[in-house]
Image (cartoon, rainbow, N blue to C red; front, side, top):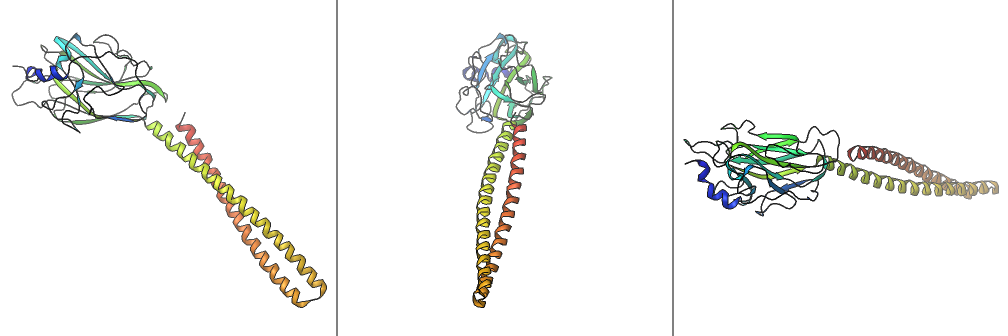
Length: 324
């Protein structure tokens, strides 16, 4: 008996049906999915273009086949040979939510595996492609051999369909969205279960799982950081400006005190009153000292303001670069 049929009941009951791709809401700039609900996640879509098409498509995984990489035992998504019928070309798509800011610095991480084969069993190789659409429509096309708008191949697990090419234990993959000429590109990322000579009667395809998918929009993260730096720098400029204003006012007041004390000294000197002269001299000396200190605080406030203004200019430049 083929190993295909060992898991036929599990696959048929848990991987039934294939949904057509419909209009998709935009995804958050960074997101993770652990498939805990058991249903197709919000914003995700499945479409089975296998030929001839089978009775199943991407759906909740089975803990009887193997447990999830993380979370409850059945909290992963899976696809299997039942995506096609007879001997088929399998092209079963799991499309992530539409993005509006794809960038070459963005990253995608996911975990995948196939069944653990016992010694002596025939191995039916599996293959998984990760593809990207960058024209905004996110359509996988209409045929088993085509890829529709998903013309960018990011990575392939077991591209040559070798018997030992797909990991039999959960394995993490990380890919970057390299090759994008611009930032803020609208499009989608999709997982394609693509196996030739697959299906129940084919020599290839069995059962694969997908778990812990994490998409990180690094460009938006950098933009957020840059914008936060601008806000912080603006606050520093505001604070430094207020400090300079208050210290300048204090210095102006101290200068007036010096002027007043100096007038009193001249008056006492003219009157020839030694006691008043000595007293006036002390007041002038004290007033001048206060003025010197006030001028130092003004100079310091000007330095701080200049530094804050420079930091603001730098942050604004960084923000312009990071947030096109």
